[in-house]
Length: 399
Figure 1: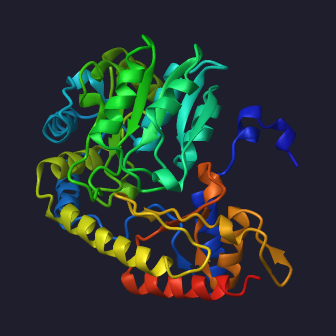
Figure 2 (figure 1 turned 30 degrees about the horizontal axis):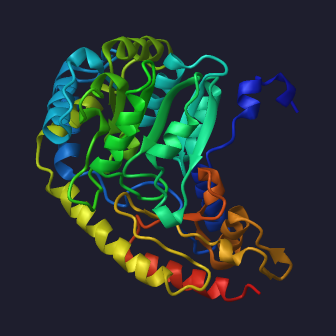
């Protein structure tokens, strides 16, 4: 009724597809259906006990007040040391900004760097919010696409071809949401050689899934020679420490950009929660065993899911090397139908599987690839087996 009063920015923004599908699943559950939700990007593990205890101790010790906008010194010191230890990235404290989640860190960067018409290269498939955050900040998303036959990884040649005099920065995630792909040191080195040819070109490296990595090592592009001043490294606590509800993220960036992000955040949310930051500092400096156990469990589930999904006609599956997603190409099912419902794209298939199999997935079109669907395996093995059984049964109905 009042949509004409809303700003063009809001009217042009799409709702997060992952959150929308999660809500549809909840609505169906409220009607009494047994829905298996494989749509949300959230570990099914609880925050490790020692981290929760650190937050309780912080509360008991009076950490209940406002915090400095860019973060508590104790947390920034822990992040600085973590960057050096795990990523070979050497940031000063004034180059680190703590935010209310990695999503806010990305939004701060976009608001700080983009004027209307500025271009941002987004490696595609991309995390669902990149496109809308860039657009909301006035930027123009430029999609550089990869498909399952290259494990959804963009090449340096593709990147070079997409760069124009309006390109401000590139954004990508590794390990990747939604594909689980992990870029190697060699692949990132090739990107760096392209980027270094352009004086005012930057890259935003979203490393939120760093610890959920099934390769030999996680590699950060900012650690390559000549790249620290051209890289914004984004990370957080939600995935590796199962701290999604804590809303705690951070970035490392050139000091001038970190200062700009602090300025923006100071006018929008100010600093992240005090006791949460104290717990975050403890998480980065204490026992990582729960994180390693979680990653090992995800690896077991990945292998099980690949085996099960390969048995479904019409599903083409690759081998993701990180995160907790599988992104099968399901385009072989396009043109098929059941009881008048035709499958023309990934949104149709996701809707069909929700209503017929009561399994919630996310359409790949939300991530820039309409030939695929995203399946989160952040669920118990029993739930995953049952979900795939239902999917296979429903897909068999399509003719």
